[in-house]
Length: 398
Image 1 (cartoon, one colour):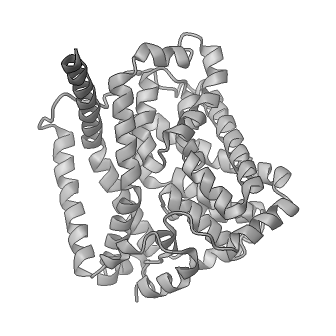
Image 2 (cartoon, rainbow, N blue to C red):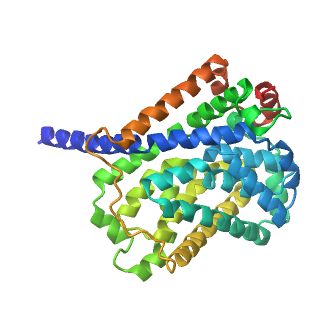
């Protein structure tokens, strides 16, 4: 009997690991492509002066913060640290939060992964729902984050308590100088900067990607689809429309997965019957996972942290509703509930060839990173928020 139980456990774990590895293989090349494009944008587009335009919660300031965040691709932890740094330097809390949401939900790598794994409709939904969510958050902050709450949050923020990825958030590795975009990109400092952003971004999200793949693999291997269909009320479209966007962010909160790492699990949930609005609200919810809520408490105090979490949750739910209401009459909601995210074996198909090509690109950037002597930067990723100016000075390109 004990032997049978042991074999059952071994087989179950093996199935989950195999599913996770298969998902990882399927999403490898779009991840490398996304982080490469993100590295190019961050290396060449200088954004330091734009933060001066984020000192209030006007539409202009929110728009600037959103655009800056979309260019400043970050893992969720680094985005939260960057938002606190902007707040300490004079940005309004609303603008800082708009930046935070955009830098995790409106970035190129997320759009590519969604398109490849789940379909282009999900990418469009992400880039339609993301700005709407930021508008809802701005309205929520104007109503419920004012006066003494914001003053107390700023006082707490100025204490400079460390959260996570502080060093990574503080590093400015963009190419300086007055040359044009392409000359800066193809210069030696440009290549070094792209390689630094590429490696550092990978290092910051690798843990979340691995955890996300393991959780998605476990869901795929262990959770019967009938259970998910019952939870998401498949077969009851009106109830599913109402309930699933409420459930999506809660599942994200307890999964502890953020950034692009939650896309494989989103695909499993979609195959399991979650509504379109529900899966979009799940993807949006990377900034209210439990570890990040604890960081909000450390950064801004419990009162502000709970209001931030509540406003974010409400905006994510409402954005999920709005996206589904908009996409349904346009017939843009996919009907395929059998996304191929797990394969039984690796074959010589286009995925394999693309993985090989982009692994060579990754290897090239890793060599450039190594030759530039940038490995010590990885040890500084956790850093301390009050060393950000020193980090910027040390790692900025000439």
